[in-house]
Image (cartoon, rainbow, N blue to C red; front, side, top):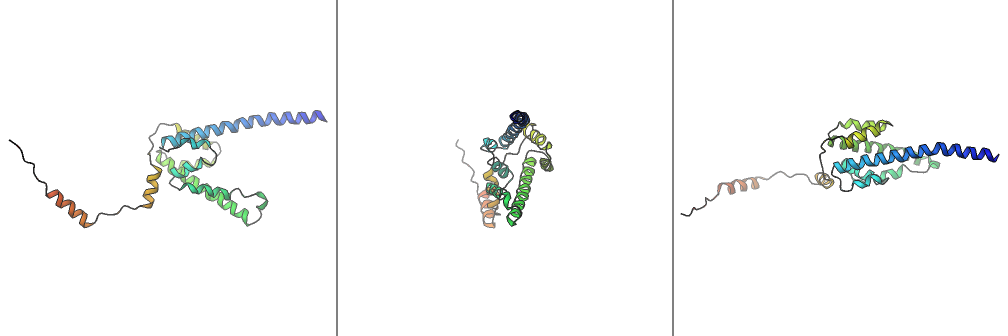
Length: 184
């Protein structure tokens, strides 16, 4: 009986170690890819790519959204014991909402990087998501560097058109140029 338990433990270890190594490898690959994307797009803190949860903040900000949308994820992690109730439905709705938000953010990031925004839809395909991230991260293309503060300022403050008084004042100043006196 004791021999069977050890054999089961050995088999479990043999199966778990490759999956653990695969998980760590994919995490490192994804973090390096996102760090490269954040750096190329001019984000201040590209190291955010390495911290789970915090790595979503630059994705949302570079996609033109406020960072606080990350809190939408809290609705996804409602305990499974409540899955049959209304709270379970709310959890499903927040998961779908965050998935849509992430796809739209990636769409905008990919467009800024010079790629078709529709590539963000491939992020839902299991192996294609890593291929697309690698292409966007490491293929040499010029990114449109946009400051997160500038994106937020554009949304808050609309450009005001010049009034007639300002336009007339500019014309009057332009007509009153005084020629300089030349000394002999």
